[in-house]
Length: 57
Image (tube, rainbow, N blue to C red; front, top):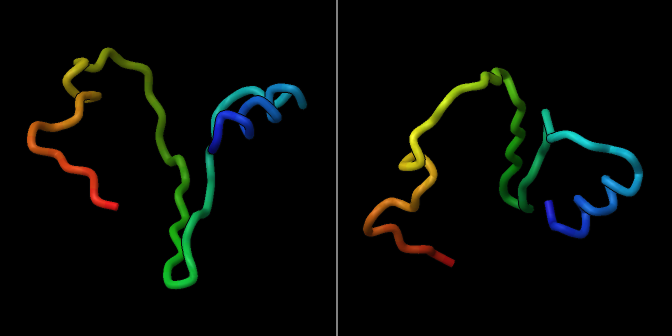
């Protein structure tokens, strides 16, 4: 999802988040579906990039 796509959805009155999506390439197909959601307090460390992480392009 790009910021432009999110803006278009908002302009159309579609607010919320995706529950099911599919992505892939010519060699792979990756379906993703939300199966559980819960509200909770999570430590900020869960959202930090791990030490030693390197982006691979």
